[in-house]
Image 1 (cartoon, rainbow, N blue to C red):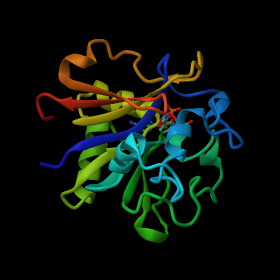
Image 2 (cartoon, protein in one colour):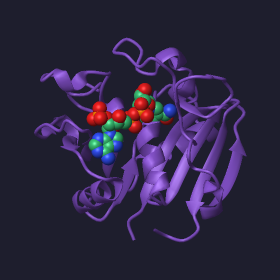
Image 3 (cartoon, rainbow, N blue to C red):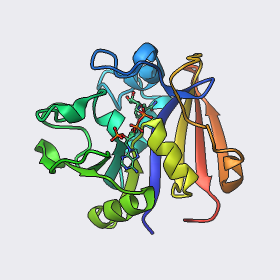
Image 4 (cartoon, rainbow, N blue to C red):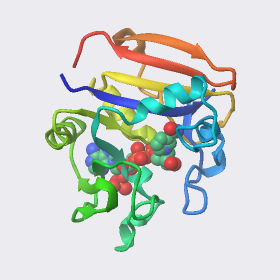
Amino acid sequence: MALTRIHNLSISLDGFATGEPQSAEAPFGHAGQRLHAWMIATRFWDPRGSDGVDNAFAERHGPGIGAEIMGANKFGPPGWQDDPDWRGWWGPNPPFHTPTFVLTHRPRPPMEMEGGTTFHFLRATPASALETARGAADGQDVRIGGGPTVVRDFLAAGLVDRMHVVQVPILLVRGVRLWDGLEALEEAYDIEMVASPSGVTHLTFTRRIPS
Ligand SMILES: NC(=O)c1ccc[n+]([C@@H]2O[C@H](COP(=O)([O-])OP(=O)(O)OC[C@H]3O[C@@H](n4cnc5c(N)ncnc54)[C@H](OP(=O)(O)O)[C@@H]3O)[C@@H](O)[C@H]2O)c1
């Protein structure tokens, strides 16, 4: 059965998946690139990068994925909905290469990009968005790409089968937290942990009862 998966979701020690304020100049606010420095250093990101534990986890992001769902604040900086020419952060050939569903209260017509990515804009509940994405995923898995608000909503609705969280040894103190409102989430998952020599901790959540 096709799964709903999350990969490479990086959080600070105090649970923030982005800093503040988010802007065109600083997509992660005061967090800068610190949440993803571990990933940028891997071969997954850069052919000259490392090939160790971090790369082994990072590489699991793509295989078997047939569609992605992301939040409006991952797709662009605050106010992107007012810019009819905004086509996402990633240039003409975004790294998704599948149908990609952007949850927003201000939908617009689909955008076909190079390389197989088409952005679709949806105002829908998590369950309904997942049904739509599954229909487009050609039998493959659906990835929930973030940010934390959308991930939290899908977790709260019990819709996530596999989740890879990377705990980064920094303290952000402000931003958007991942875990708020998810008390006892661990009861629904088998959780494993691998400490990387880079200093980050990889956590895998495997749903006990498939959704
Ligand atoms: N740490 C990581 O690994 C990671 C991963 C991905 C992204 N990020 C970062 O996380 C930040 C974005 O996260 P975020 O938590 O601020 O926001 P987000 O989850 O990307 O998006 C939340 C927004 O999506 C729209 N939305 C959510 N659910 C919806 C629904 N059911 N129907 C319609 N619209 C819906 C709403 O925007 P509107 O009301 O404006 O339409 C909502 O404010 C960015 O800085 C991004 O770079 C971090």
